[in-house]
Length: 259
Image (cartoon, rainbow, N blue to C red):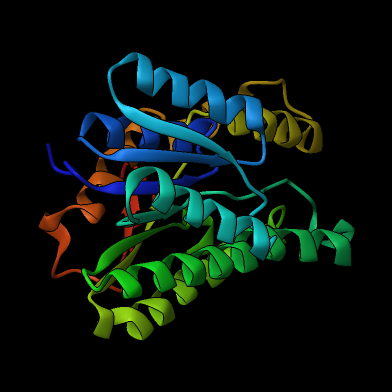
């Protein structure tokens, strides 16, 4: 097991990609803090892990609230004895045409996707530095951060910022032996993409399900991405196999974007 004896916090762990990472980390031997704004979802995932003889606990957290994040880290340390891995998966997204994007929309995307990532990384890094045994931070970016899109300007911009923040945080923490890397998924089959499909369909005048089908057709590997596809990369980046990798953003998108 690649993460035996490690403690991991996964934000946004109650559903979708976050849930997939939590379940996989537990199978790899990690004690998992399932952190989510949705308490019921976090508790459900934690129960799934415990029912499979893994170690987990659920924590309710708003990643934009520093005191809540501090409590999340303190809970991990109290329950499991330390903190080795942080996965910044919590994020928000919505399809909004450029001319209809408001200042509130922009602030919301950057508040959760960027400020939340900064706060969680700072508080986790403080604990890792105090432990003096290094650590791993994995940030969830997106293929949307690699290019602009007319209907997703604010979201694309926030994920481009995540890719850049990933580099800066990696450089800042390298001296403490904390590796910081990102994953850029593509079109992932999650509850979020059900909503995104509906939003695209409404704006483009298509039938519900048609956006997902058309976008999936463009993927070279010929199928929509699953949370498990992202989880595999998240295990690698959190494991000893990635000890000499930092500041990188790994595309996990079926070949949908070349760089």
